[in-house]
Amino acid sequence: MCVLLQPNTSISPGNYDPENKEDNLLGPSGEIRVFLEGLAEAKDVQSYVKAHPIGDPAITSSHADWDYYSKIIRSFGKKESSDH
Image (cartoon, rainbow, N blue to C red; front, side):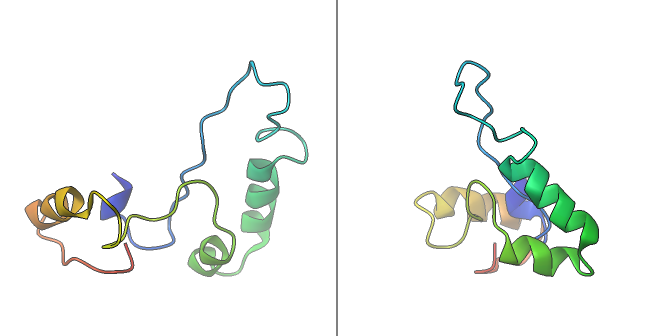
């Protein structure tokens, strides 16, 4: 679950829809490929991910379901952070 990861260490791209001919997320100049090419060249992964967000935003204390997610975080013994 991404809420348990360190900030800026993952991305959550939307679902790929093969029926949607306009969806080039995975294409040669698609968002994922461009992101990964930049990531491969990055000197600092977390800084790159922070500067180039893809997909769903991180779950933070302002999320509508934060009460649920904060229980999960506490159950794993992690400190809650507004960065998540």
